[in-house]
Each structure stands twice: as C-alpha cells, then as structure tokens.
Length: 472
Image 1 (cartoon, rainbow, N blue to C red):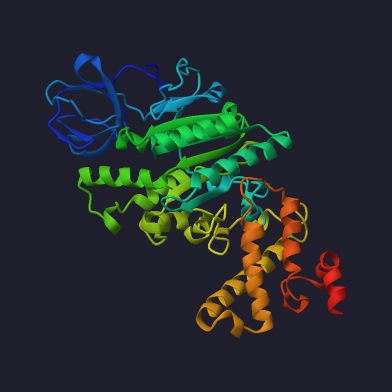
Image 2 (image 1 turned 45 degrees about the vertical axis):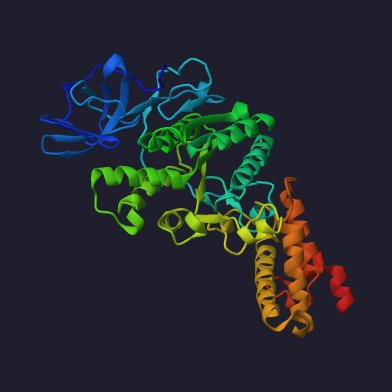
C-alpha cells in the first residue's frame, strides 16, 4: 500500500534484535543513532513496519514500532535507520481524503506524493511569532457563542463522560463553523485525528461529514480501537502537521479535531510501562504534561500567514472525574474547556453544556463592539451571575422547600429553569449570534431591574424598556 511518508536510502542497517518488550524492540551494538530517528523494520515476507528511536543507552537503542511487534522473530528481522525524523508528504490534494496514522490511504485512492514534506513532530509555535487571537468563531450553540465564545486560533477541549453526546456536539460545531467561515469568504478546512475510536464512532463521523456536505473539506487520519496503540501516538502529530501546512503555507483557517485525547494518553501510559519509566499519578508518565503541551501548542495564528489553526480536543473524563490527570493537565495547557453535564443530559437537555463549569479564557478579546455586539460582555456576565444565583436557590429549595423561598428567590429559581429549558436546550437547530443575544435579553426580562447589577442603565433602558416602564 502507498504511504504518505517520504522514503530515502537507509543510513545504518542492523540485523536481529536482542529483546522484544510490548510495542518496543531493543537493538544492541549500534552507535551514531539519534533520539526520535525514523526507522523501518523488515520482517518475514518483506513486510515493513515503521517506528522511531525512543531511548538510547550507550550502544543500546530502544525502538517504538507503530504497527506493533506481533509475529516478529527476534533473529529474522532487519532494522534500517534513516538518520532523520519521520516526515509526511503534504498537499492540498489531501483535503477530502481519509488516511491511517502512517499516511496510507483508507479511501481506495492513490497515495499522496508531492515535492513538499514536513517533520511530523513539528514544534510549538514560537511565542514571538504568534498573533493574539481576536476573531470569534460562530458555532450555532448559544451556550458556547454567548457564554463561552470560541476565538479563531484557540485551543479548547471538550470535557465529556462516557455515554454523553460529545460526538454530536462536535459535529454540530464543525457543521455551523464551516458555514459561518465560508460566508466570510475564507478558505476553510477540517483536519480530524481519530485516536482509538470505535468503528461505530468512526462511521458516525464519516456519515456526519457526508450528510452535512462537509466531507470535501475534511482530511481524516483514523486510528481505530482495533489498531495498534503505539500508532495512536502518531495520529495527532500527522494531523497537526497537515494542519500546519494548510494554515501556515496555504492560508486556510483550519479546524483541527483530536478525538479522543484519553485514548492517546492511555497509549502513552502503555508505552511508558514497556519502557519501564517511573510512573507518576495513576500510572501515567511524568512527562505527559510536556507531551500534551507539544501537541496543544502547535495551534494558533502566526505573523507570516493569513491562516490559523483552531484546536478542538475531545476528552473523555474517566468516571466523570475532572481532577483525573488527563483533564487536569489539559486544563493547565489549554485556553479553557467546554464541559458536558450528565445531569442536564439525563433531563433530556441538549446540548448538555455546563455553562458555569465551562470557560473560554480568550472570550473577552473576541467579543464586544467591533466583533459581536457592544452589549455582549455585560449580557454574558449578567446571565452567568443570574443563573448561578438561580442554582443556589434550587439547592436551598431542596433543603427548606420551594414554598419557603421569598419572592425574589422564587424568581431566580424560575429563571434557572427557563435558562436551561429555553437557552441551553436548543436541540440541533443552530442559532446565530444575534438570535442568542436576543434570547439572553428575553430571559433577563424575567428578573426585576433592581437585580440586574451587571448591566448599565443605558443597556437596561435600550433592551428592557417595557420592563422598566412596568416597574416604574
């Protein structure tokens, strides 16, 4: 099968290996090898498996084979070292195509060959060359657009739990974002890195992209649950390498989706155990923070290009535990998080976004006058404060009973219910930013003007004039 990686003559060739350890092989008696060096292993029937140098101990080299070590005979093996890192052929013709993590086509079309190829390891964007993200991305989801606005060039994970509809939410975001970006006349592409997905999830995304007319804008790299876990470590790197090419050399605005980060980290732990490194929290390697950062920090906007990479990472929290090392470390690196709430989901509210728990750290710089609307920041603050107050009254009512609440408390309680039923719960029907803003003002009309302390008198008079007149 054709491959998307360039192929040159091997620099060093070694026959036989001294040890096979899980997805790793150990070669003794070889020198002049570099960390991260690309290699190919030839086994029986001229099969070739690709890998990289993971560790060097004097003349002992530990190698990670992306396609696993099954059916390998220690003596009947030849390792070829190429003296460079792994590189991927890149081309605009990749758009609309599906590949595995090794760059091999899964769509029955020919392999991609071009004069351009990039190191799959890439590098975090130099802070001095970054441009601060400003322009918001409209997702069609009010709980995100109005309350946790995504900004072009941002890296933002979706924290979900087993059984929650994160795939559906991500699909909805991508569908509307594509329409909104193309309406601006921008070049737009989606790069999807599937890591350890079940066949059902893989088929779901394929069908979703096809039904929404988005498939011709997608470059997909698929590593399924049945594929090698070691290969899973390569998936986000080839996806981000493709994103960098499209964004920074071809001026595309690229929406990069990585799903599922938890599967990636589990593969990282599996390789770490085989490497016999000292484990940290819950058995994950101590270098997991820097490893995740090497992925997340490849998104953004740079001075020398008109393109951008916006990263949306799907992350399943084990046992819904947000303090688990994977979401915990991700939260430190990324610029906020969108959290899906199980209690909202159980009540049939979709999308079940936890507005109070979610956060977009770049939101303040992408909204307001000149971006969305002048009243957006204060309206968002007031809705946030009022909903939080309403949830507090809900907890109080559970203790003392709803009838024991005073009039203002009961109004806040009603507001929290309406906010969830009318604002958060919107189904698959997208809303424009203007529709979300107007709905927010409509909900605030339920509250007394005296309680709207996050809004200016001018804003209240402009948007809640009838309510002011009534109270006077």
